[in-house]
Image (cartoon, rainbow, N blue to C red; front, top):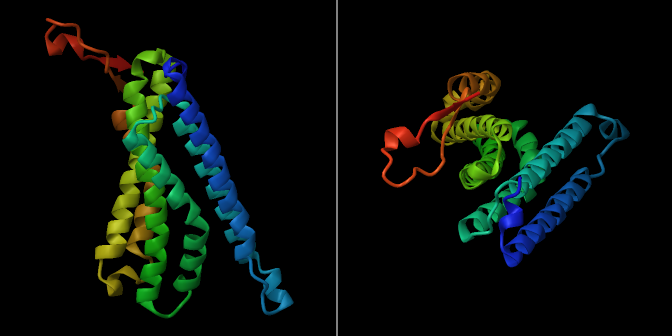
Length: 236
């Protein structure tokens, strides 16, 4: 994408600095994972597989967040005030991922439903805090860079945009479930928030089928041309 090449020198350098800063922040978050693996009470606890499932699962999540951050920056990102604020919010929530995961595991195993609600609420809120800003930036990038991309790249970006928008919507619904559903219903056999997240894969598939087939045409309408002639849809 040639959008960054068209930015003024100061803005182009600022985007590069934001990329480097994101590497530092997410790298620091990854280093904190090892510190979360405190020395257990017994040697048996040291080899317990759950500890390492949590560790490597969180590491993979942070790696995905790092990759997504670079995808945000490498698109048609322009360092306006809203975009910079959204980027910093994304990084701020990313740094809390290790703590949120371990807090969720710790409190979910307790016998206190309210503690379990707090644990999973913080965990879902953390990922909502990364997903929603990333989605907003992706929409802004898509609209800014529309005329700087070819049809093939535009179709790929549109399908990706539909996917992350669906993920963000489901995370917001799951967070609302955690906050609003009475605790005696929330912590039955399977929490309703977990059911919402299980539906993520089929929901993404349905969203792509419903909205991912055609890319909306965002090209500027020439003066004097009716809107009906200026906005069409680009088929996939």
